[in-house]
Amino acid sequence: MAVPGTASAERTAAPAEAGAEAEALHKKLVWLNVFRLAMVTVLLGGTAITTWRSGTDLWVAALPLYSIVLATYLFSLLFAVALRLRRWPRALAHAHVAADVALAAGVVAVTGWSDSVFVFMFTLGVVNGSILLYRQGAIVAAVLAVTTYLVLIVGFEPHRAGRLPVTTLFVHGSAFLATAALASYLADQLRRTGERLLASESDLAAITALHESIVQSVSSGLVTLDGAGRVTFLNRAGEQIAGLRAEDVRGKPAGHWFSAFESGDRRETEVANERGERLRLGYTRFPLLGRGGEDIGSAVIFQDLTEMRTMEARVQRSERLAELGRVAAGLAHELRNPLASISGCVELIRGGGGLGPEEQRLMDIVLREAARLDQLVTRFLEFSRPAPPRREDTDVARILEETLQVFANDPAAARVRLEPSLRAAVVPCDPDQLRQVFWNLLANAAQAVDGAEGRIRVACGPEGEGAEVTIADDGPGIAPADLSRIFEPFFTTKQQGTGLGLATVQRIVDAHGGTVEVASEPGRGATFTIRLPGGSPPWATAG
Image (cartoon, rainbow, N blue to C red; front, side, top):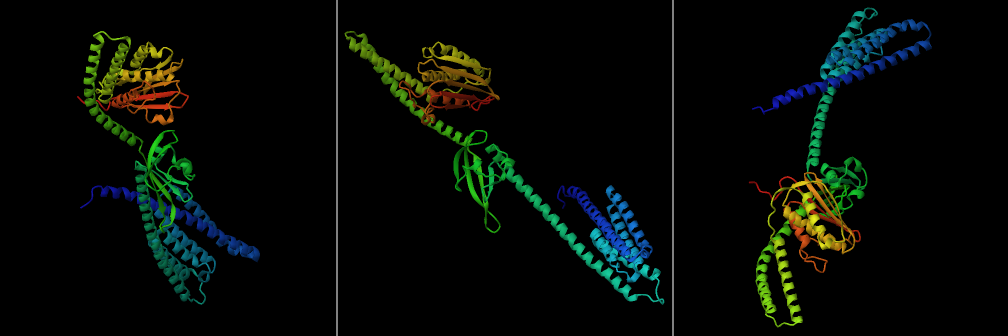
């Protein structure tokens, strides 16, 4: 039963193999034509030197040999022109064999017939035939050589006393046939060896291509190093992660780019790639061994775990907040009832009269702190159990502009100079929740300026299909030790702060599928950057 596609594959492969065989035959014809020219040139040169040293009488005797050499030159020139056409390669190969035999016959005829020292040229023709056409060429060349030599010696040699040189004919004929047998065997072995070599090269090329395809297709980065620590290979995923090009690092010391990969254990490390991106990478380093088990270098497989670790942190934060929400619901219920009772009782006592100024002041403090505690419980509930965003295509710049107009009239912004730079950016979002985000960030920025005549720079614009908002202040900045904690609930460095403002900002932005980042240096202010995605947000459900 034939495998589908096998016949078509064989039909496709056959012309390719025939073309390769024709090309190989063409190359051999070119080299043998050059060899023939070199051989007759040596023959002509040797003859010229001999005649020059022996006197002018030998020039007449050497004229037939010169004629043969000249004819060989003309034939080789015509043969070279035919080879340029790249047509009829097998016909040209047979013509080449016949020409070699004819050349040998002519040289033997003018240099002593059966006593000529150039009888070996017939065997050269046999060898050339085996080189060109393998066994077939050796047989054809041997038959032509034996036939031509017999005809030449028997029919044309001027014999003395009518005797034939039978022994010479037998020896030379046997030599031609033996050369043909040996040459055909060696040529056949050479062809089979060449075919096996080509098959091995083809298999090796296929395996190499498969290996290259597999290595280049994996999503993990792979870099290999030699014994001196120089980069020998970097796959496509490694180029993308590291922000490098393989040709730029190949052969160079790996320490400049991959110094973080030091251990053979499975580890994680934080690095900055060539694009300036901070990445969390997981990697494994292991030695590379040669066939004999010797150490020839090392390899490192590495993956970009930044997004995975970010998602894990979000999931953990969501789990903590979910648990916090359940605790908050019960805590709020338990707190609000006593607060309401305390506030009611204090109001009754204060309204009953008979209290002195000091007692009135203490009652006011109790009422004020009870109201503050009630407000804290309310904000805590809003943080721990936020309402799901209400999807609505909205211009973020318009929301930010409205928030800035209201914030400009707030006492906290009295001495602050607002510098907006707003461009329209429409994304699906909840306008009310975004107003809360912007207000919290603006309030934090105003508090960071701390009453001085500072600036708050506000920018908004599109980023791809989404939107990007930045709010930067001229305050003292955030201490490096506090950067990783500012979004934690109840973490605050302000005396009157609740520690829920930035936590609420992150909770709302996360619910929109966006990100919020902060960059700050002590003494140089802080910059908060919010990125909101366009299209359908992750919290949108199909109707």
